[in-house]
Length: 130
Image 1 (cartoon, rainbow, N blue to C red):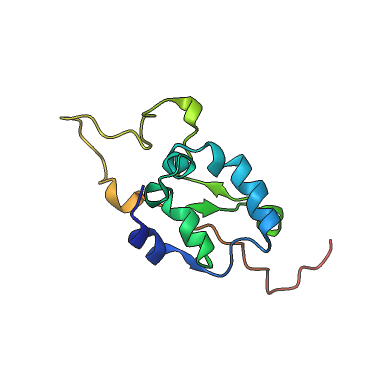
Image 2: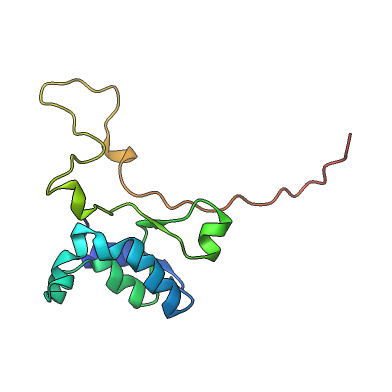
């Protein structure tokens, strides 16, 4: 997971949730069972998930994605950093690192990271019915 400063720099401007109820519902499905926020739930707020603080600062973390307009309306984000406590201490990272001595066709670095999905622009040309 990125540090707070790195994540804050990559975050989008604009509020994440329109009211506290949206936050509570989303946090119950995600943050309240994620390994990254477990220290905060145990009273160690300084080591909690930095993405929550970014959301409370009025920005949307780049790690919180929406794929449909409905997800955006209901603030039903998909957190790319979510790791369920039930999954164990160390899930294998994705993408799986290249094994030592393994050749690569292209370097991985330019293709790794977080993608910010944006809605498609509406067509500007009129489409005539057939």
